Length: 594
Image 1 (cartoon, rainbow, N blue to C red):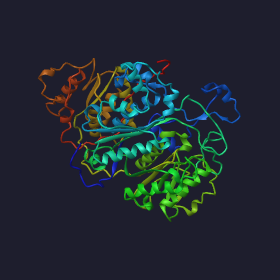
Image 2: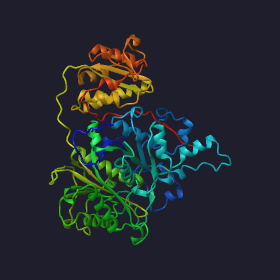
Image 3: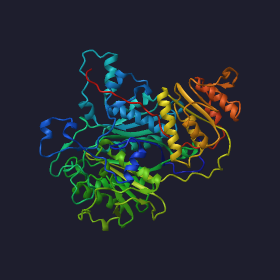
Image 4: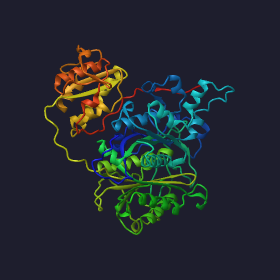
């Protein structure tokens, strides 16, 4: 970590430098955002033979065959983490999803877990009921190593410590149990730890898999589950939400350090706050407007943010008129007397109610909105509930996709999560700081780009994904891409490297069926006398930065030699950028017996 930030930043600001998200209808954060901006609903309406519940329940006239299904909820690629198939089957779906998501967030931020220096805290929430439905381990009379392994793989408590261990990191591991506010609580605790200096980076998130999967729900008048499977936030005809599954994680670092380390910043956490209603609620578990309002106001106060500068409010938005009215009343009290300045929306209309990860879907939506400077529409809102007096509040329902042009001159968002049992949580996010001006990229300078994977098939998929990413993102600089690849990816056994002078050359090299020119790959590497190359404690040091010196390094590296890529990029001003993460090759794992 760098100790010399480029300029002063608020010491309480925390940067979001990596994101991973899997939701109904989306396997990546990019697909998730694309679904939102195009107003897609990702709730699935199931045929009877697709529903994994008792048939008498399916035939109940109030049964609603709708849910937010998660592709690959029962699949995993344990080999990447050195996990045995036996252990993979013992792990609950949420344990497996979370460790993969933590990996992806770290890679998205441009960090190789093997080269991370310092403490990394991992904070996460899951649903204890999932573990019980996945079947509890037997109550063994003798608890030997195998029983302990099974218990640690299965336990909801060890979800974060499993991720810390299998990613090869050290730091804090805290699994929180705060119902549907779990994601927000995880982010809050992560930020607190970073600001106290207990950790250098943090991964915070939540995972939810509803079992049996997929399944619908029974509708009951006035309860939180939708009568027809659709969620209609702030709509007079809203009846609640369908249940859904997913996972979302953020990679976090103090903002000043993130800027100094030239990290890719999506957004900034300005403030966070949590509280509980306690005995103040009308009934245990119900929302309490004054307590929620205090939570929202506290998050803004912590971040030094005035309400008139917050122009997006991502609501808990359950889609039930009573709860939506209470929430708008609460946030209006926190924002004070102002009108028509803040967009309001709710992602549950797109993906349903994700339980402990519901706040994560809202936070990723708001983060991507800040990053792309766009406001995504809230769908299924056709008849605004007149009992919510929006004209007398600061809030305007976001009905269409729009460019985000705030009157305050800065983009800020508030995201609320509410959990059963009286849990309230709120995050205040701000758009990323402007990137400092840099000199144009050197023209015609040779650069080394590297990829590695566990096998040739995964390596080929990496090449294809990177090629497509470069084509889709023409503004990416070659020096940033190479810097992020060489230092931000775990080095595996099957390798590919190319020495290129332009983005076009890299795209061409990635497209080639067989190595040619200054391209080297495992099993097809040109001969090089590795013993003649200079070395230090971290591996081979390039003899220079000309094409031949880089190619000699590449040829040695693809045959399994260690290379000191830090020295290769020393003195550069390259930035980490978001690139495709590892192409997991998941297989189905499902425990049938212990």
